[in-house]
Length: 138
Image (cartoon, rainbow, N blue to C red; front, top):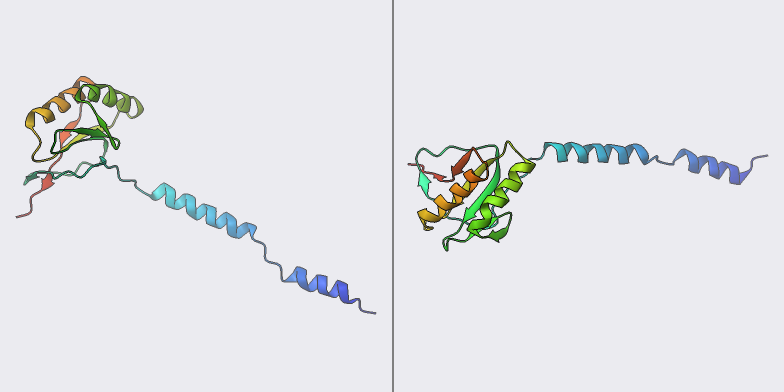
């Protein structure tokens, strides 16, 4: 004699989908995309950079310092005083000793402020300090 409840259980067990391999695959894909993603660092403000015909790209710029048109200095999306640039750069270099410093100055900012910021970076121990410029295409 055929038992109806056991037949239903067997049919239900046969159509069950195991979700564990699917979840494992999703996590592997997530890890793959996180490892292969390059994160873009930004200064936190919009700066109108001056153009230069000889501008070159820098790949390992770990520390970005922005100077806006009002000569205000920004690091990591926050405003800092010119006297605090040295301490902030020293702290960032302690985290990443191979990091390069890029000063992104607005074209209407004063040259004196850019020099003071670059000087503070060098006093903090940064050996690779650059001034950012937009590429002039003519």
